[in-house]
Length: 65
Image (cartoon, rainbow, N blue to C red; front, top):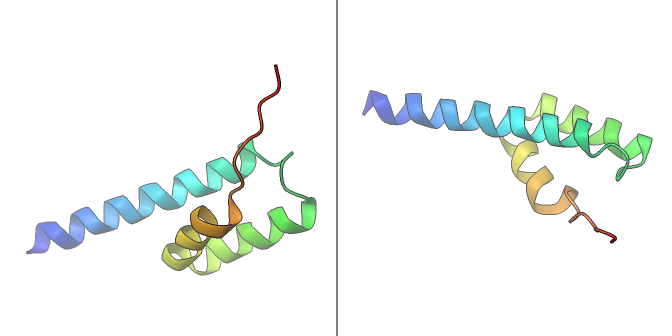
């Protein structure tokens, strides 16, 4: 059962890193205050903040051709 917690930790850290990288890459889509707030939320509450960011904080990209 130790492997389960190890795997869960690896997945949580990977999701946390992906969320932070996504915020930095999409900083043009977020206003400066929103970006700062999301970064703080994700850093202070890593698991819950990451889930909240992907559920309610991330807006789909609009592509123009």
